[in-house]
Length: 326
View 1 (cartoon, rainbow, N blue to C red):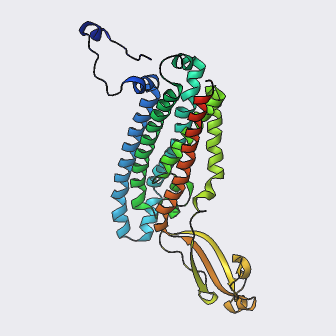
View 2 (view 1 turned 120 degrees about the vertical axis):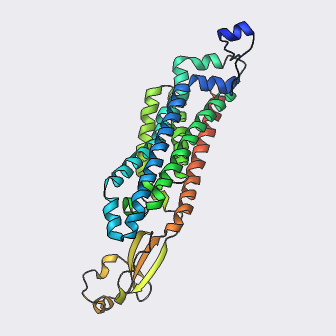
View 3 (view 1 turned 45 degrees about the vertical axis):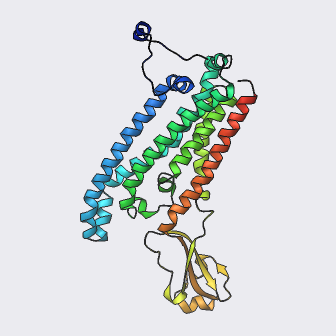
């Protein structure tokens, strides 16, 4: 398949202008350059905005910390918190954009326009064409998600104990920092590309990919914690419920009987004295939590699982496209 495009100057001089991309990668870039360039420009703008907000946050964070916790809470409740909420909302759109605007139209658009029939009649094999299209778009998605994640993480980390009340296990922090946004963007892209190839229509593929994004947000939450054991603190009932360590997030509360059996937190909630708890057989209070230092391991485990699913879907899409008529 010939992809050479000559401009008037090249026709006169007999030379092509230098290009970084050549052959099929150049053709894929040329075909989808509007979406690719838009993603890169929006990523650059988002990174600049978040790095500026990081600068602003550091400006009030230092003086506020010197005046104690009350000043910190007051400062974090000002417009800085509103800016951070806007940042988390923007980051939550990264996987959606990767799936709906990059993945879903990638192959379905070619099928609707008939471009796929032209490509598959040339010397380029169907498998190579699919591999280059998927690889190029996936690279754009990964680069954009990685840049935005790095900028957002650098903004959040200095004030991680303030924003979102310090709860880093919630989706608006956990899913938007570290390696997780990259893995989620690739998963949504893979799902969008697979749906586009199967449905052969762009709009239905985009709608179903958007539906997948909502379903994933609801169903995948428990996966963040399922592969990590929470830490445990136990106090005698006379000392009350153990305090949560700094930076940690609460997982569960229990009461413990003399035989080590676990009971619900409310087992002796209405008891006025520790003696009344002991009369009910409760001898200790148990707290399960995740420490702040466990967050990276939890994120990398979760991201690895998501990434494995994304790669499996991409491999299946490539396998199906090579063996079935497009």
